[in-house]
Figure 1 (cartoon, rainbow, N blue to C red):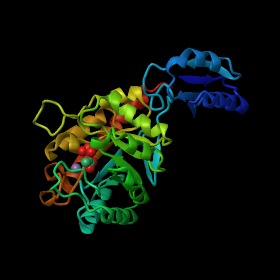
Figure 2 (figure 1 turned 90 degrees about the horizontal axis):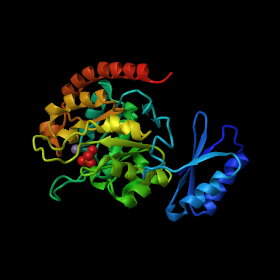
Figure 3 (figure 1 turned 90 degrees about the vertical axis):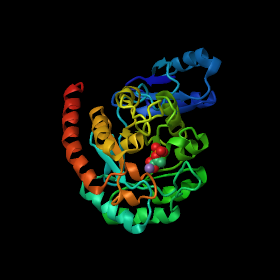
Figure 4 (figure 1 turned 135 degrees about the horizontal axis):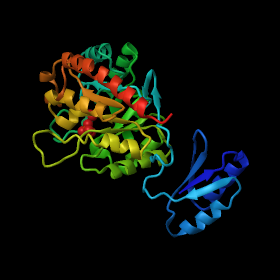
Length: 346
Ligand code: PEP
Ligand code: MN
């Protein structure tokens, strides 16, 4: 439930409400909106719902207490109507600009990463991606360079100024990944790894949570809720395709996730057409579709020589393809952004 405070609530009123919530064994989370302060009551409310509604509703400074129908709370637009905007170095995610995360599937060598980083930066990428710890279907496939790759990512950041994002696969890797990376990524296979979600909630780094390939949008938002509830409000959602009966593509990109999430959550949403399609020829059209559907950004895999790639070769764009895609995406985004501004309430 949410406790909506009156516009002129005092700090003492707010502290009073929070202390009551704590005394009931729940956790208060506040959001200071443009007009009102809202305190979310998070915890196992169960049969105490009516008691709490009455108790909190009678406290000084409280305008009303509203039960929330949705199982996710902190991620919901009801709690925070304004978009979450995340800043990392010079990159801003969720402010209406188009975030472009690009780089190889895996960091394979220092030279491969630096060449890709300079190429994607020159073409307009705002964040560099690259896998260090790789989740691979086969134990006999390339598993990533690990910490060596993290060092190359840090060097690429020094060289280009681009913030870097890389995946963390388990909680005991989080400290080292967060030491080098600017954004930590949780992959599709770990979307419901609740101990990893909680650990990421305690890190200072923004987290990009990829959609589980078999997860509904509600399950995905519940997973994000774990990260927010453990203390980290800076979460980016990434639609990367879901498994369906279709075999023409690696996964099926759920383009409707973009406008659906825009109504349900304040968190920014990035689309990954590389893992969604598995085929490089399909990446530019799906990137365009995602931007048209309102994505805050795109994550794409780019390799200077995809035919030599140690992972996901068929879906990685060449640098030339990336440049060509960017030349189309930029004007499309301008059009979409001006349309959104025109539709926004004054
Ligand atoms: C990745 O982005 O490197 C990756 C492995 O993606 P996913 O978790 O979506 O398969
Ligand atoms: Mn990949």
